[in-house]
Image (cartoon, rainbow, N blue to C red):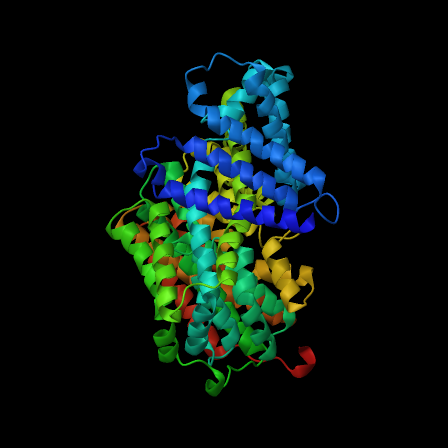
Length: 630
């Protein structure tokens, strides 16, 4: 039984990416088969549900209960797929042949969601579903319109505004394509290539292994689409190297977690989320990438500065050049891994192809290059790792996409979206935009805990973005704000999934690692507020405003990096210096807000900040701690 279920699970895993790629390449249309997207994506959802119950059994091993429940979920959603077009012309009829499979499909979807994404997100969606049925009993502004129960079920089960809607379609095309691409990069050995390239470039420098982690994790993270997957790929190399060169375990884990997490908002690919943002806002993909460029640059600049300060503090040297890969040799042996990324960017930017199609072409390119490079076809093990691994990685994201359809369906049909917008707007009107942003950031971190990157953004954009825009926040600024804080949930205790996974690899204390991660990523907690009040930081404004915003932010980040790494010093003089640097960083960083986006005072303040930093480097240079203090 165990062996048979394992084979069945692999069949489910394989069919998920295969069906997605078939649809992306328009194979049914090429064969003269008329289909709509919902007929494919609901089957993919059913496969993900069935696979989930085998992967996450109720006991130690999956058995008949998991098999039956999973198959019932697959059958329910396949039933919807098989009748979707027919039901489009028969909306008024709501017989049991429609709503009974709808109830089965939704209930089993919710249980599969709980198994993959945790109880918290499942409870949230259950509460919203309950509101759809009983919201008409709520008082005041929370009162919802009353609908027949069968209409609610079918609206979520078989309507393009419910589960088989925009979010699931995006997940089963764009996100699926990039997950498949990222998985093939892992299987092909691209992770080692990026790591070796970073090692050859940075490994000999002060604190070299940590700088390697920053470079390699950011490069691979922008493609992989998963912070945890990135840590497990690059961290297994960089964390032991950091520890070997003298970094404490919690610092090694914290640096890897922050570097890997940042890859999700590093252009040009941004772990595929850039395409989701562009699709939600109906703007150009290039616009999203340009907007995200400076915040991502600041994130890694400050992280790099802090890594250098940590190396100074602990007296850490780089690795011996003799034991490092040679950059030119690495490039010559692994240049094939750069071609698929170039192909991806060519189809995206030059030919303006659909992101999903572009990613599939990149996958095809990499497959061909792997065969040419190895002078053989892929082994059975490589094929299994690629195909089955892609499907397995997609399970939680596909289920979240289905659940997000329920969230959207309930909020739109009941009017809850409008009511929440009014409530949050009321908070903003009464307490100010800053208070509303702080509340939104907190909600984003809480809702995002433990969820995949794309899923975090989808839920937050659905629930919170309208309220922000109601208060006058520019749509792109609002969506990037939510994306950043949702992703920061991966670093923020008590969940802090990215930090805890890295801590497990490093053998460090989870809480210490989480707190270090927050400090290393501090700029990401602050910068989103800046671009809300001054969108020039995301390239919305005049050239002068953009230049001043970038300059002031870089200077502020530089000061903040120095302050954060001096926190360990106990002397009163040092504490006062840290306090002064933090105040100065906040004042200069926000100077475009309180002085004006094009005010000459911003330039003056930035120059003063640079002078202060340079002066400090002379009169109070960073020094290594005594061994007794380490």
